Image 1: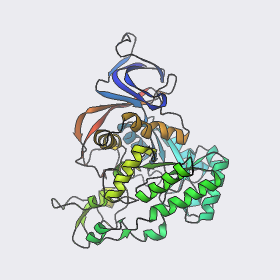
Image 2 (image 1 turned 30 degrees about the vertical axis):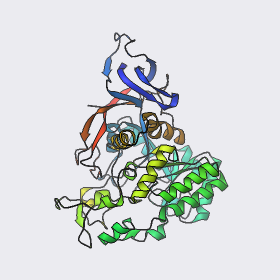
Image 3 (image 1 turned 120 degrees about the vertical axis):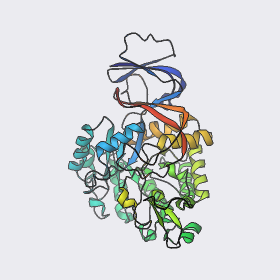
Image 4 (image 1 turned 90 degrees about the horizontal axis):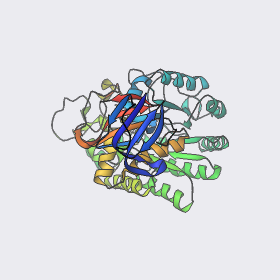
Length: 446
């Protein structure tokens, strides 16, 4: 098909483009970009009116959990890809903590095969660092890369043994692959379920010490410094972690990267507590001290303090943080209906990420749309070395058309994902994805 996308504001960080323009798509590729109104509409199979919208490279989420194989009742690759398309994402990187773990060439091939059967969203598997994610024996990095691994990660936990992690960094550096690093000192977690502090004390729920994240962050920064490995720090939520990352980047001149997620620059530990209202909503329960708490706001790492949230926002604006990822972690209603301490960690995010990020960072904190799209598309493409993140002529036509003029309310159900464990239900936002295109084919539209 030959498609004209007209009247939109084109934002393409890969070429430093931010202007009104028309995009021409033909044979699955970007065929050109022209001044708005200068292209004759004759000869096109489809005209897309993008007035009032941003036209951006397809978003790339380098941190999702699609639960297949093993927990398809929570999410499948097909339903995860549908959620991705609804959120403007055309490429995602899925984490290895499935059942069984993604730690073999056969498991890489399985993910690629299932993705090929889905809607056109590219699914890049991250292979586990250690066999079975047990933290003991390293997997065969070279064989996994050959089978299609995009990165290595132990996400869901950290590799506890620093000697094992040092060797992982050394091997990853040899073959030029990134390590996506979950930073959590497991011994400090010790049954905690929210950030330790005044609000965990108020609820009576066991807390996770704020030091748990930065302790592994600094260890792995030092190991990456020693080995020259390509380190990407995942779901950063702590001011102290950000101070360490800033030190590594500015003082030590390290080429490391780091991500955060929308819940860490939007919510704080206090938001785990919900006031009054209905208590029959399945994801709400009463804590040991009689306080109503919301398991849809239970994630790992847990929500931080006001100071942590403010530090995350500053780090996004000054470039200390490179990427916005969702850590999309679907769970069933039955699981989230358990008491808060027993409910699983994790929230969904693919279908809300852009709107929450645009509203919080562009509308409220003055971030330029160019920087936002760089963090959600161009930079992840660079880190994963996967292509995409651009509207350059001749590139694969992965793009999204997003209405940033209309305010809407995030629902509590009715998602393309199988899950509905969103922490943002009821939030008023701007940034409604109207169309997602992958390889020149429209895979989502409303």
